[in-house]
Length: 233
Image (cartoon, rainbow, N blue to C red):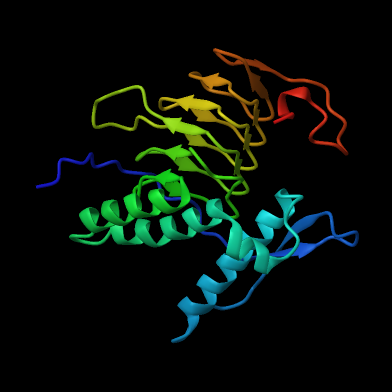
């Protein structure tokens, strides 16, 4: 019998389907509402295809080395790990699916270098750049439009069967080698600098850097989100 913790996540609000649209200069991606229906026998297929395209375009928007959708699909281990996780998360929730999900997640880790527990909850347009060494724990929750660099850990600090991993808001960027540990809450639009260690909540819009991480609210040029040196990763 499985001894895995039974963690009850609060349901997220219902979402409308979204589509990513390129800006005029090719450098931006903006999200617009899409009333496309997923009803009917092919509804699930259309939904999966749309979500996959969202992931690909989200990756292109955040990776200056990406030259095409085909290149991203074929060469992005972070994207491969996320797609595998989406299927394994569904398997995890099915009766008798936990052991197969864990086995397949281990196989995915050996191929991509990314370890994501099948029970973790990942939002839309999530992107892991480079991928190698990323670990996302069982009770972690990640919002929409989040980006992680290589070596990031969303880990725990407890051996109890409780909510012990971070909850990450929307539009968060976490730099290479950073550790976010425990059931902390990282607010929307937060930036966490490379190699920082976060063990306390980070309020929305803040920058967290250092060991342990120090939270600050720097003045930023609204046209350049990478201006802050914490993000030179």
